[in-house]
Image (cartoon, rainbow, N blue to C red):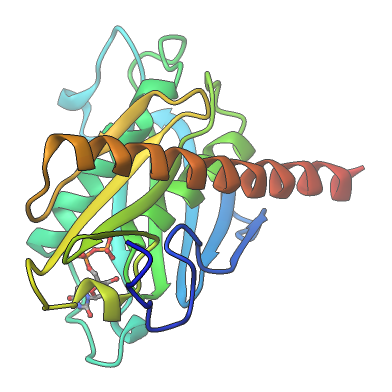
Length: 234
Ligand code: UDP
């Protein structure tokens, strides 16, 4: 396990440099930026507001609706603007990752819209988007049981590494790469896990442990950014 050298020289359990800022879109009810290395996500929250189209209203509770978008210039091969299968999938899993912490029963017939834009992409964009969205929801004052934190853990051949870059995601030696984005609450409840590749049960447990440790750091960064935004207001 210690033999493997990461292209950017990081330790196996070391995340990329992280930055977060809350309150970056003045017109939104809540907003945030989360940056991990060269991956940058911004999230803007609007609502709760009346759900349109009306037939989608739920009289029992409010709903979250996420829209993930990778900007055309976020990678060097320009991305075709508009909805794709990939963006539809990531929008949906982002909703599922965040929904368990939201307390929307007091807002029947409404929707909380979360727009996530990836301005720069070097892998881990869904995780960065979830981290930004979680802070933006808190900033918007949406009642939440907790924040959601997200990180990707990868198995490169047989070695586990945290917070993969695109170069690492494309690693093609031995068994090839396995990418496992995981989202959880700070008390360790997993709200989202995807597995692209192959992994054994024991190693998957190690992956979850590694993700938990990294998510503790993500949580600290999110909390600091939220505190800072409150201090700046005062
Ligand atoms: N990517 C790209 N073009 C695309 C989709 C993805 O260049 O149309 C790159 C981008 O750097 C992205 C990475 O591939 O971050 C990994 O994408 P994946 O679908 O695995 O999701 P992510 O790791 O970003 O959550």
